[in-house]
Length: 166
Image 1 (cartoon, helix red, strand yellow):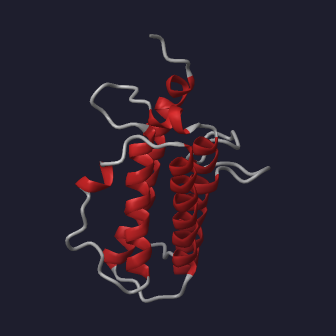
Image 2: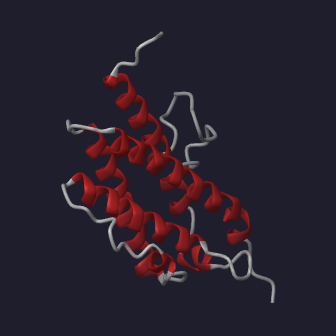
């Protein structure tokens, strides 16, 4: 039976999360995303105006803003957990979807905070700590969660950038 080195596991986890947050590293292969430098969360959201990100591509479904705000909420919880809190009890997951439209200033603020929380979570994963199975499963789940919502946002990207037809 092969053994897995914990340091290797955390380097791999960091690599995947970094690719999702910042996009593919120049000149490197990718594990999840296209090689397009704008394929990560950073490039995806940087390419949109507030109006584009606020568009409801599918009536009754979330906008890109909604997905971004939900990701900000979840990454903030992960960072609070990494700082020693228990932020999950009573966390308002439904409320994290409330914001669906933003103006230019709000979009810039949302995106800035999302980038900060993504980088803080990357740093938290690099910080020495005692991990148990539940903790590490949560960390892995956060990567899958981010990948899911990034994929949902990227699926809306082309339509969001089109000029609305009235």
